[in-house]
Image 1 (cartoon, helix red, strand yellow):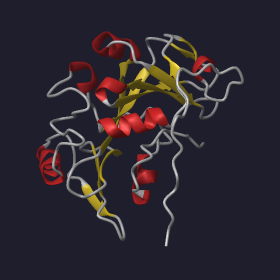
Image 2 (cartoon, one colour):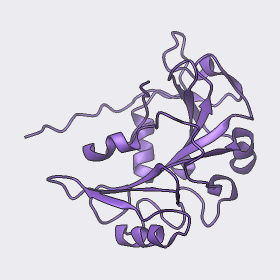
Image 3 (tube, one colour):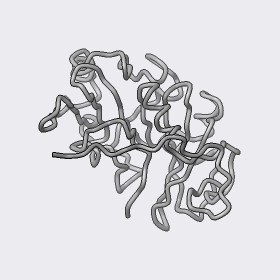
Length: 229
């Protein structure tokens, strides 16, 4: 099964792209148990547990993670021929779920949090309001995802659906979120085709490949790949 996802195109962290891809087992009880998307505590997105992309120093963010009692200490990796750095961690006794990335090695740029499927889309919308945009990512007959975009919070929330023929309802589970800097959120909007959020309904309403797709926004910027030596 191969998922496509809207990774922030400005990040040049080839080393960490695979780590940020959606996991094969999307509904994983061994991922992080986190309710901050609903409670907005101890801070609201794009801040997560006191770490704000674009503001928090890498060293301070690592300290926050290391002091957290519900996760194992993060494993830090650096990129070759680059100042980029990344960290991956897991819930205590769980499986790897979460990543943090810094392009320059000094300030956090991106957080990727995959969480236990114990919060619902209905609860999310009650707590945060409706998203601005949405788009589906087909997987297989049993698993697919809907990405919900909250541009004002530089936040993308990932919701599980039971395949591309399924229905999206208030009972669908929230399984992850991407927290990023405002400029990276804008870059994603400028380089993506997204539907306006139209509420619950069939997955096909948000299928990026449907022939009559009436996107609310389409790419306005074309990215030029950086040549490699």
